[in-house]
Length: 241
Image (cartoon, rainbow, N blue to C red):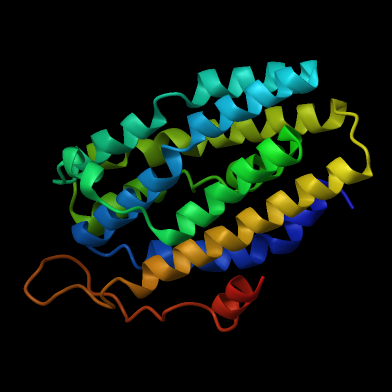
């Protein structure tokens, strides 16, 4: 089974979780909380790529060296994008330093560090595949701006990634097609992808559970139906994996 086929198996689970999460973004406070959690993940992207690049050099894998160097240049500074969106949404980015990152993000990213350092940096391709092959909808930023009442300046990271992730996904397809991997490396990439998928479901489910079900009374805009805590069985699947 290819990596694409493996990711396709968990894509419905990811789409259900992300659909519930975006549906729960019905006011500015909810969106700011999502941006904080997003920052927990995004600020680890460049360090992960740096680690994978260094290990690829050590392993003498020129294809991975070129790819990770390219991705590092592409992804560097995206945490700053999220901080700018937070500022536009009325949140002081300086307070992020005092915030404890969510546990689901630490587990998700920490697994990648372990595999890069103690197995092989090719593992990171599975992680990247899940993130890049599920890009945000092109109209999501506009929809959220209408629902939350925030300026479009608070949604620039989403709008940019709607385009960037598509291009990055195609580039990853090219790398995977030209990468000679043995059975062990293939299993490692697949395990990384599945772990990332389940980690994202855990993160999104926990985020939805922490949000109010409806817009507080007295605020303008459309009123939304209560949002369930998450699809049945997802939390059990994640916790027991």
